[in-house]
Image 1 (cartoon, helix red, strand yellow):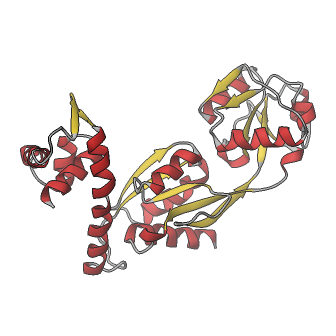
Image 2 (image 1 turned 180 degrees about the horizontal axis):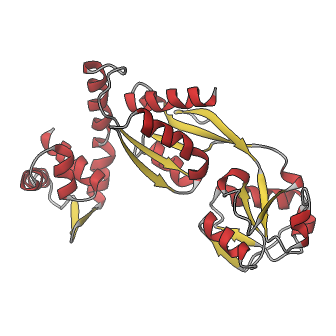
Image 3 (image 1 turned 90 degrees about the horizontal axis):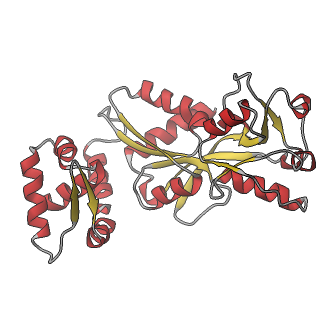
Length: 287
């Protein structure tokens, strides 16, 4: 178990130095445990690259099994120190909607000032995969349909908007239709993003299949492109800043439905203190 603990910490922290700091031991001690573990196999578990490590195929297989021990240790610790205990927490979050959830993240940081928050940003699908793989404790993203093994809490709702330069005649409209937008130069995000999937669906329902010559991965970059007059972009209304006068967020008529943002976690991890505290605060904030 000591070898496994050193192995998991090294994978989670990304190198031997941070793993040693996390475990409260020396770096040579971590290295020695990894070497003992690798001696049990015929091929390496880790590839070393300067200050970082990368899992080999065998290392990936082993980590899929052994990362369960982190939850086991946390479960045992929650019995030793009950959930109401004020000990520092380490909460790992993956969010596809940082602007939506930043007030909640801030409130948690203020309520538990000694705790550590590790936040990863990505697409909805990327965040969902991290939750399913137990790489994070909670995901903060839209989950339209319930899934076996996952719990979700609706936290916020907003709708699809077109992001339009103020000089564009459509910026003065209270809402715009996809037929009006189809005649504009459009800026799309990567197809695997939740927002772009909604955009594609809304156009397709109207029998329209527009293309774009500008593809961008980051919402802030799309807004910046709109501000420079490159075209019309799309976003969920609260995923972009509302105080920037360089663009207007105009609702799309055919997308009047609301998109719900959720807290998402594995049902098997509901009892863990980091999940209970964060979800509990979200329920209070929602009220």
